[in-house]
Length: 98
Image (cartoon, rainbow, N blue to C red; front, side):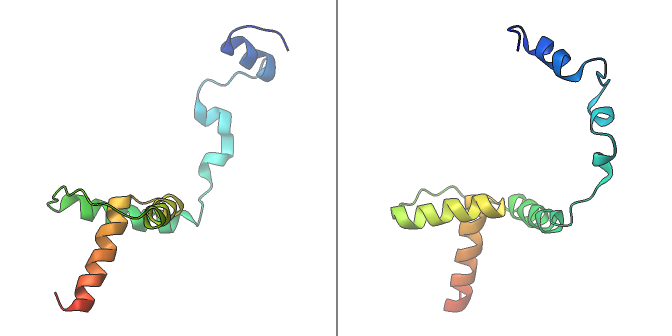
């Protein structure tokens, strides 16, 4: 492959089929709907509701094991760590009668 700019490499790959925009490049792929996105949409709604509430900033210390579980869960579920902590504390306090 020739050395050169990023654009030149793209031209080498695409040849004469250079798209005008992303939609023409992707074609029909933009029309497909991923059914797994339903969960993401619901989580985004919940996060938006949570963000609209008044929040207070609080710094706490977590054990390394708890922090890693929190980070992993938030990443896999595509939610914020704050959202997970708020939901978990809400459930905890409801069980305690608060």
